[in-house]
Image (cartoon, rainbow, N blue to C red; front, side):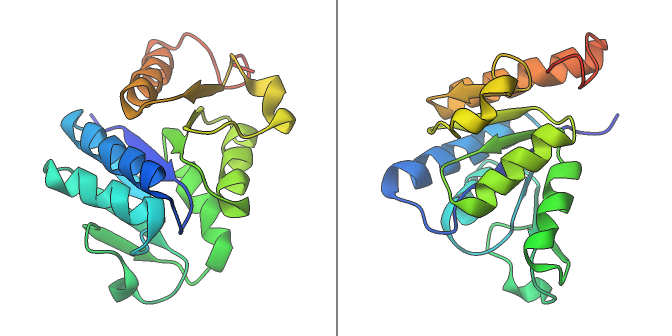
Length: 172
């Protein structure tokens, strides 16, 4: 059976609190036997989450915006060079079973929106994505304050999908 893929999205620049959340999240993804997928760059949420997963022996995938796989951060096991710039956000979302979004900017919000539009569950960790996302709360969108809570919510989404409890459209 295929391992669950947790997409960790967030800002290239991150404050200390967000970096800590991302690193802890990466550790928990690895400890749970899941694959961590991120933007792959050596900065911000991407770098911290990947490094956290690697610290705990996890497997990490970085979906890079450029064409050079060597541009990946040190915590990335498999670097996928897309040459697609921000268009790689579609790959991030579609390759993830659940997206956990940490604080970030427009790129992060675009990944949240894409995930919801594509029927993927999203956990917003440490921030509220805003009123434009209200229709999805309580369905495919959940809010978490801690990495532990985010992983618990992600596991709940995965459990619903495995049980066939609801199609993505029914979760809206």
